[in-house]
Image (cartoon, rainbow over all chains, first blue to last red; front, side, top):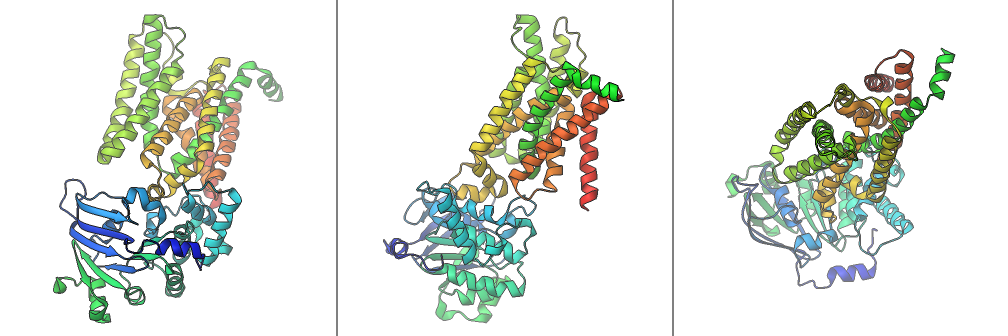
Length: 253
Length: 275
């Protein structure tokens, strides 16, 4: 899982002129309320890493869900892996905020990861699926926790399980929503290493408040606060990053 | 005491009741796992009370149209499935209205049922059999219907186990993997509806919700996987049910309420033991 086979890398790089994701002039509102996102445009190149930062309630998670086709924009268009997201999103991996999952639900780590193969094309045999799940668990460094209940795990371990679920289908693009939130410092470093490993060969969109994550995965940084502001790497420094992730966006509007 | 128990064991009525209880327990234990883990108890309660409307309509049609073939349980099944589909439809479009709709079905379904039974010419049976159940009235026909319901319920769960698991654990991720969350939610609610009908035979409209939730809630305290919750839920349903029936037989008490109380005591005991 760490190293994608050659044909998979070829697949990811094939059509590299087509972006992994493209958002054009998108406005989104929940039902009849005020728009949460206004006139948003951004491009995620194949193999590139885009980081979304900004204050709480600024629309980062909403934008992620619009890009995945889980929410439909009021205006504008979204393309994922060259097609409409509802047709192509099964080739995307998604790591939601950990607390979205019910920790009391009776499910083992193995079963959580296996859900990442749901509706996978090809009609694989049970043993092939189990092998893939075990590979993903090993990549995430939680192979020994396969039989444990998901609810018994620490925050960092649960996050790893959700990353393994996203990786098990070998996606072309990975979307992560605050992967290091509520994770203890010891688990955090290992988690960042895992994200680095997961990135190889594939595009990545990261929502985060974590300055270290932004610095480590710096390709392009977009600040989302109802509208979107693109920050080039050249003009980026820790102070600016800290300000953007901490919510002091007004000064940069 | 031993003679009484021996008489109980040889009684055809008791054996039929035990068969009905076991079959209802299979449905209640398996579907109850979803009700407890997905927190569908309030929806199940709404469906259970709407069922009385279907029973009332069936009794009314039997008496006024001469449709003697129409067993009240069929009326219950139609009302339950229609209620489930209505809730699924409303919750997908106007989620904020779901609670109001359930409340409406809860009260209006029951009111319609009571009214229809009142208007049924020559209806003389005690309404409490429908409200609180009378498993001793279960005959071959009821047992056959319960077996049919079990086949449908267990078959659908076996076939859709993974999609239901995804839907209950993380519905958004299920959608990402291409599942129609709306479709599977509707199917799940129909299963809940059919199970409510099965449990109505044991504990009636009012008490059936306890049998849908308590054994599964007890099982969820001990099992680590959804399949384990289902298996243990079926086990608890049957064991608590048989214990409740025995107590009701020995002390000549109504079976439905006693079975529900035994389930409640069993759940609380497990809760204290696990703490």
